[in-house]
Amino acid sequence: MAARKPPKVSFRWWIDRQIDQARARGEFDDLPGTGKPLPKPTGNDAATDWVLREVKKGGHDTKALLPPALALKREVQDLPETLAAERTEARVREVVADLNERIRQAYLNHHTGPPLTVALVDVEEAVQDWQRSRAAS
Image (cartoon, rainbow, N blue to C red; front, side, top):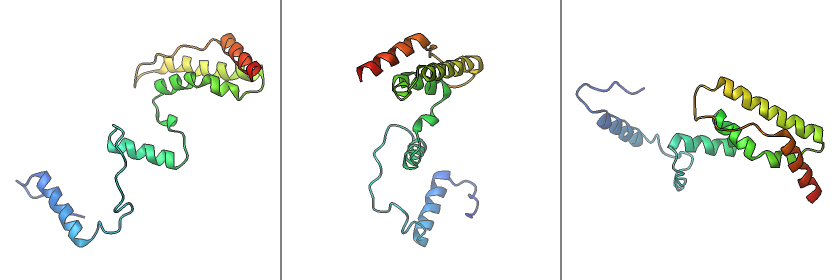
């Protein structure tokens, strides 16, 4: 553990000194990624970029990181693709009813994050769209 920062010394100088000493001791030698280019910035902060890379590397869906208001909006946008995988009208109705219930609950319990602007999905319209997409394929 590093010693405490002496009084009347700037944090920047103290941190730079700690890094220089660690470098001199060889603590940065042979780190993973040494000599490789840094990933291209996405406009997010470094911590967000790191989390996104790790989640994708693990084969997980990054939608799980969205705040509830945005996750529901994304789910409504992806609904036609989701319903296309369903085989029965009853299951389509069940999926849409479940989504609508989660939207209702989100409006009742929404306290933080971006504003909730997603509307309930019309079940009959979703079923008709599903039927049209099945007839077309």
